Amino acid sequence: MQASRGIRVRKDLGEKALQTLKYFDLLDQNLRIQIIDDHLIAPILREPSTEQLEDLRKQFSELVIETTEFQRRKIKSKTIFDILGDRLLPHLLASLPKSVDIVGQVAIVEIPLELQEYKAQIGEAILEVNSKVHTVLAKAGPISEKYRIREFEIIAGKGETVTTHKEFGCIYRMDVRKVYFSPRLSFEHERVASQVKQGETVLDMFAGVGPFSILMAKRVGKVQVYAIDANQDAIRFLNENILLNKVQGKVTRILGDAGTIIKEHFVWKVDRVIMNLPEQALEFVESACMALKPIGGILHYYSFAIEPDPLDKAREDLEQAVLKAGRKISFLNARTVKSTAPHEWQVAIDAKIE
Image (cartoon, rainbow, N blue to C red; front, side):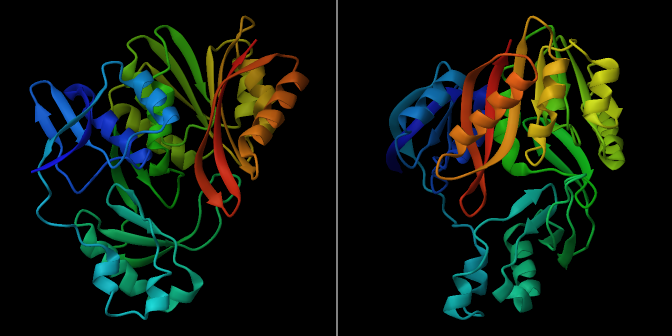
């Protein structure tokens, strides 16, 4: 046993809490989680920052940080570094990918140029580390602007790219070659869904296979979500996911261009708009403002912005676009989501549009 700091939450909020701690890189995975009565205590690596603690308390009102006794995990999980340590030269080991995206049973990895001739070995090592993975894909091109999909190369496993991914109690069926999905956005899916109120009408302008739409439909008893996407394959899997998650009647799928569909069907009709298309979201701000009710509503905006002040830059761009659309804006929250390139960040902004 080892005494360590931990975060206590209600057991029914355990999965959400663990995902959030992982997102903040706070969860100590060398220690076992404690279950005591109706509560879960998760071991943490360090005290949360002031910003992190504020975020945690917003999501978990009964959260308690305490010192308790945790059991150490007996077997340390293997890593690809452990497996390839005696097969690659030290300078090549330093270039091994630090992270792998797991989407259901498919692993997606970016192989540096200097490791291209070892990609098959890296793929096999990933399979060995992740027993549930049956296919390893290497990124083989940039994300396309139109459908946000990219080329992949199969470097290990069966080669099957249709998979089922589980997240926050929802099931998502997809073909990772044909649709966009990022497991790194799981915290965002949960964060946005937790803000939706009873009776809202929500427009998910770039819905993909439904990670925002379906989660909020499952979480909120009375809500109507309209999920738009221009990718026919995404809409096909979205329909399947609506059925799998039993949210028929609460999520309506729509194939087509979001701007055109809003002009034809959603002018001043919705309470909340989600714009998860960071490459082009700025171009659709006028359409989003057009969809929100005259009394106002909430906008969840995603964009790419560069250092030194990515949040300030994103806020400035969004404010100018909203004013140009003839509406007013007040900012509720802004955060960096992930690094996407040297000195570039994906950012998320929540704003009230009036």
